[in-house]
Length: 379
Image 1 (cartoon, rainbow, N blue to C red):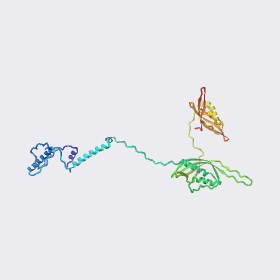
Image 2: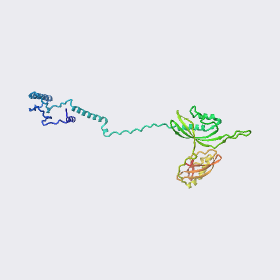
Image 3: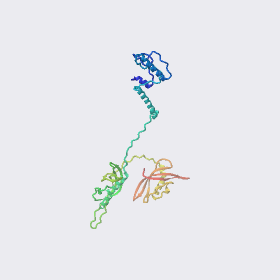
Image 4: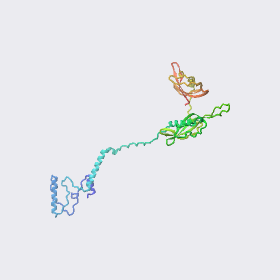
């Protein structure tokens, strides 16, 4: 079997090393060396091979029939015989296959990709399945209808209340909702508030209701007439209404619960103090006073700046006077200020605050300030 060195030289295509006798092998014991000179090399390699065969046959007859080892001296043969069972052939073919595999792989993938690998694509963001938003507006509408019917009762109209409640309750639900059928209470206003989803398409809706209890007077006795019902002070009450979404609609799922309402609102945020312009306030106070008088009278065109559109107040509002007016500090032909106005409304005097924008209107010989816009409130 071929040695490892021989296999490596075959794969790399290197020549075999030569021995001292120039044959590439050590002399074989018991085999006589050929002393006669080799015949001249024929031009035809097939003739050379035949001459070598005849030489080996003659040498075998002279050595008492002993067959000498085949000579490896170069005889001009263009090939080297190989044993097909030798591992050198397998390794050589395997090496050639690996070389061709690398060449084909380079052609397919590109040599550039070996040294400069392509950038990996950015990972896609995971898809998050979000649930649809709760239908707050529909829940508020149903809860408001329920609260009006639930807190407004009259013992003389019990069936009317049950019919109103049944329109927002599931079938076969007790429409009395725990009412004993006595007393009377009027609902003056309903204001739906926050919707708080809980679970399983359910939610809780806060509703604020303005109610006024009514106390029936004693019935008439003899010739005396019955007294009129006595109305109690109106008050706001809170109501938490349980609702659920079913088949694309909102339905009240059970009895609600009364909750308290704070006596005072939360603390207002601190607002920066506005600097005033005393000189401009004095110059423009008359123009602002004329505007509010016309504002209540129903004709503002003559006291507003060109191009301004300020609708007048409705009938029944009487202007009592401009309590205070202060223009904000600033510059330019458009300025803003705060006005405190007193109105007579419903038999009472009411003071209200407005933010007023004034504009300087110039003519050929003079200029004046006129109201360009007005907004209620101090913000």
